[in-house]
Image (cartoon, rainbow, N blue to C red; front, side, top):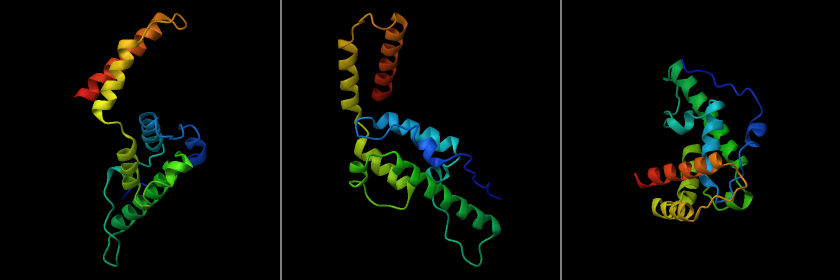
Length: 154
């Protein structure tokens, strides 16, 4: 039998910790959304296809799975919409499927690999130690950018 999804805290309070998607911060927003939905155990609708519609021949397990999927889909969609700026929401397609909605956001805002690589390379080549932060922070920042550059080229 499918596990019953429980949401232990307010969806709104967890959504308030996610940076509002404004367009230029897609990757940060995406990571926060994925993490929070995982913590809330609401990723089922993002990982599994919608189960077949229930009918009089459906088993108790199929009915439970369908109800669980519908709930996680609805809550995931609401969660994502809470964390997107209003001017962006109006330009996204209206869908009742959380995975389709996330895909539409990703298609619109995920930087292409070449432009991301170019941006990171420019940041790395012009980066200078300014003395305001510690040397360790500066090195960690450079290592982070190098790792992002490596993953964008793979």
